[in-house]
Image 1 (tube, rainbow, N blue to C red):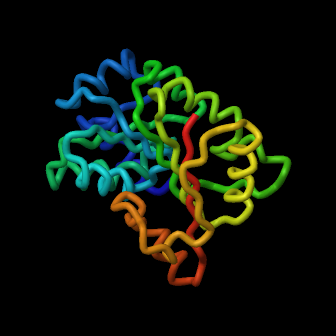
Image 2 (cartoon, rainbow, N blue to C red):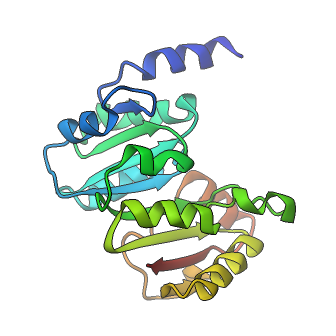
Length: 213
């Protein structure tokens, strides 16, 4: 592992706005950190936290948490949000599989899944973040009417998610296979991540699926 990566991993553990899934009383620590106690919006696979930070800047009286399994990815976003003094942002080093073990039932308002690994092979289908096994976890932590948003450039994941939503009888709120062709975008949907800009520059279409339980 490169030395710079080691340094980031060591430093990020000491950031006040970063929490680890192995920490004792992690959910209580998260609640204690935020001044507004109205619930949380999660970004899964947040990487450097582009979406998390931009959402927090749009909604300063709500709490936002970027979740990623690699602390070295979280480092830049956590450091940047500290530098620009965004108090309603935090980051969790953890796994989507463990969210229901960390967050209390009905404590999450909304979930964003932004450009996750699509796991295109059928043999890896259970790893897709919109697979029913993950949806069951999200359902446990979301408030009644809580929303899940998927943004992706991948056709397979997009079509798979629509199929799962239909088969499970979930409420489809919005879907688009070419999001930016629409003139009716919310401020939240207009947020562009670093990789999203790259996808658009390559001529890829951005897709959205928004649903609730």
